[in-house]
Image (cartoon, rainbow, N blue to C red; front, side, top):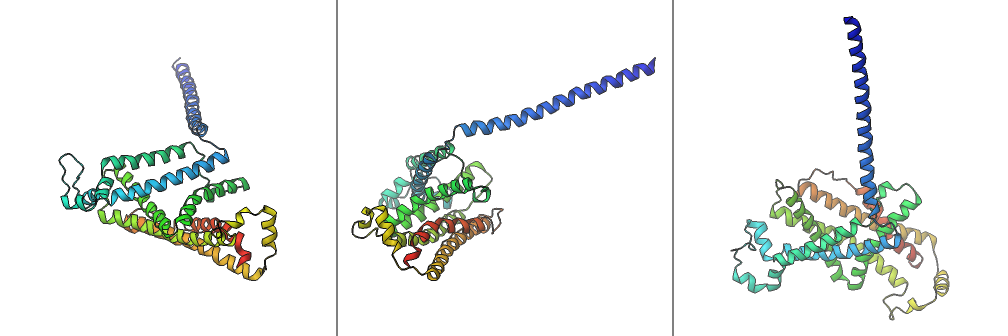
Length: 329
């Protein structure tokens, strides 16, 4: 009798375990479904129309450039220089800013105000909103098809168009502005990191030197890009005689340039030099950024992170300019 009772209990335990196992498996399935629902919900708010994606990329890059310049103005204001170096917040109630500083640079004093900082933060918030409703960027390392590569190129040219337009349109001043903006964006990034991690300490020397190094790296790449763009525009006649050749018909342009002398060996050589020049600039800039993060900010990053992708991105980016002008060299 006791043996039968024991066997019944064993069977009941097996049944209970089976029910538990099924319930546990269902729970795992629901968890996976929840993750998929989150991904689907994120996808539904993003645009995948190529025209809208390009417009959003250009708009976002433009607003980010302006925000970066605002960040530079704010961080180099008397108030922030004092706060970063001494910890004393001039903008707090009862704070005191020496009169000689206020008199020397009244514009810089405004740039260091809380009101100005709110304006800069608003611009960065707008950039984030644009990115949140736009298809996620196609990474070069994740390209698996021609369509993926096309999306990567769309992202690359859309964002680079802003920098090229500014530097070509304003020359040296635009080059400095784009470089300063990159430094400002690094300032903003470090500031956010310190806000989100109270234990993270970045000294004034680390903070300002990192921003300056990032800006310098951007200057290197944009200077090379500017030279490539100017060469292409000069070849097509832009910038001369009020864009005279822009009025020519498409077939006239094709005939005009098809008749130009073409030396395959020389063209291929110069093509390779220019492509490698841009790729090398991007490689070196990424190396500077990695070195800054690793040795100045003491981040756990490898000095080689992203170097290959940076080189390829730079080479691909300049492909249009070089390809369009290789027969003119």
